[in-house]
Image (cartoon, one colour):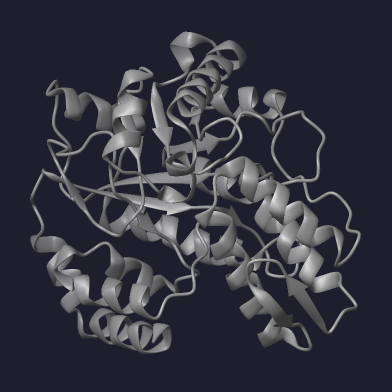
Length: 344
């Protein structure tokens, strides 16, 4: 399905229709917020979950060049100013956002953005910078399934999972991932640790930037904001635990970067939010919060504590460009229905 969507997008670009639609778009009320996780070479980190690889460095460079040429990149400050009603956005506004704080952001994504003069926002789970540990659970899951010598495994609450080839291991990854996301966070992590311990011993897959690196990036113009503390799904935390997580994460970002340099903006882990979590985020003092879905938002933001974004899923340039067009929403639906993304 993604190949079909890519073919259609390429045809639109070659026909000139895509460029015409872009040139005719003068509306100042739409904002396209693109969401990435990792930007790296395909073979650079085999222990990390490839489902979180949003773009290769070369594809990302082409995407940034596309935005710089055909759209108007904006900063988080621009968006917040417009949201408050103190200014307006240019037509074809695009905001680049990145989740999780992987090291490859500093190695590949930021140099490309900075060279093009394109602003960005990086959302970091504050329990990870400078704290040695095993790494994100989805990366540990991928590394364990890739390294195990077992050809099948019995997993509590799921049953027997065949692990004989790459396809079976991908299916096992999906099944285990879905179970993790269905459980309260502490229960999920204990269950997952037990599952992984029976399959293989793996090295640490911790690849999160430290605070010195984050301060350097912030000094160069990057907006660094909260992505929760432990990267627990907000909908799977008890109200008091969620309130503590949100407050602690905000305080740590402000302590490490300085309150004046830390925008009160949040991104939900895995993009999962609902009315209850949005209320908690607002109560914790965040002015804006980014959720999931696939939608081009309008100003003023109807739900400022659950702003939708456009997740990037290893798109070729033409398909990336097509995703920025509200009039080509069918392509987005095709990608979601046939989609392969694993939002962290």
